[in-house]
Image (cartoon, rainbow, N blue to C red; front, side, top):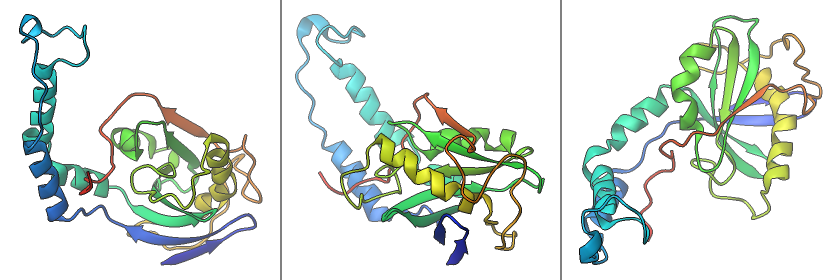
Length: 219
């Protein structure tokens, strides 16, 4: 565990690896195998139209994809290509990926996914950004690996406020398999003591993508 402190926030960083137990994956497969479909009206059987909701044929194809075509272990490998950590912010466990640029003068960039979505939304763009940016890619509280919620009061304003004191600490923390854990000067206009909402460069994704939420054994 790494502890980093600046004037606005103290963060205890715990390295994190996505690793879902095989029995949880097997349980999900078994529940998909037990899916019970509604009877499809004869006049809409095989139709791609949605006059009465999702066609049963569509649901069967979707379940077949998640049961047989989707490779969870391949997705784990894809996510684990990014250095990931857990920390505590305002009493909440927060998961994030932290990818540093080889350019020490790169600007910290906070990438925030929307809902529904996850930090996986940004995996494919990481190689295109690290020439110029140090990337911090958190999972929103209550989503994916930022669970469980410590309390039910995590609305949008509270979530936005959580990033403000944390950004300075993230920006000055060197994480990764080869980077020493020491503080560094904040480049450009990034103000670390304390940062303001307007000083953090942020980006959000609005396109849907597979959720990073682990398979659940409940339900």
